[in-house]
Every structure is written in C-alpha cells, then in structure tokens.
Length: 113
Image 1 (cartoon, rainbow, N blue to C red):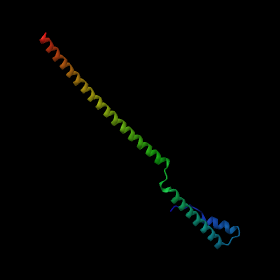
Image 2 (cartoon, rainbow, N blue to C red; image 1 turned 120 degrees about the vertical axis):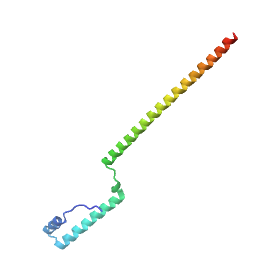
Image 3 (tube, rainbow, N blue to C red; image 1 turned 30 degrees about the vertical axis):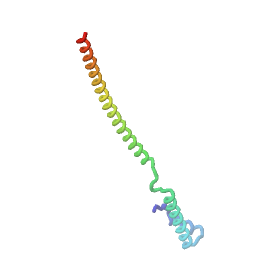
Image 4 (tube, rainbow, N blue to C red; image 1 turned 180 degrees about the vertical axis):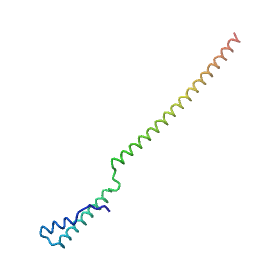
C-alpha cells in the first residue's frame, strides 16, 4: 500500500497553536491520514495504477515493435530474393526446353524435306 508522506507532527503543532487540544489534534490528523491512505488505495484498485503505462514502457514497446518489423522486412526480402531466383531458374529451364523442342522439330522437318 502506498501512502502519502505527511508531516503529522507539524500538522498537530499547527492545530495546537490554533487552540485545539493536543489529543484532539492528533486524533484529527490520524483520521485525515487514514482517509487519505484509504482513498489512495481505492484509487489504485479502481484505476489499476500498478499496471499504469509510462512513457518509458511505451518507448520500450515501440522499440520492440520496430525491431520485429525490421526482422519481418528482412525475412520478406530474403523470401522475395529466393522466389525471384527460383522463378529465373524456371524461366531458363522452360526456355531451354522450348529451344530443344523447336530445334528437334526443325531437324525433323529438315529430314523430311
């Protein structure tokens, strides 16, 4: 539980100087301190202050996300390069196959002529 730092001695002294008896002043300050601590605890519970996102947390998450994006980009570039190389191999292979077929057909036609 988080509590607010309050100088209770100084407050009791001020109340005594204002004419309030010491026991009554101490009881009032104790009640006020307890009320503030209760309100802080309620606020912490209601607003989940323990899991509050700070700029530092946000900056760390942004950096982590940027690193993941860079990793995905590099993997994507690698995959594109591999696909491009494979596509070039297929095009060359199909081209050679076409040349072979056309050459075979031309030689066959030349034999008949």
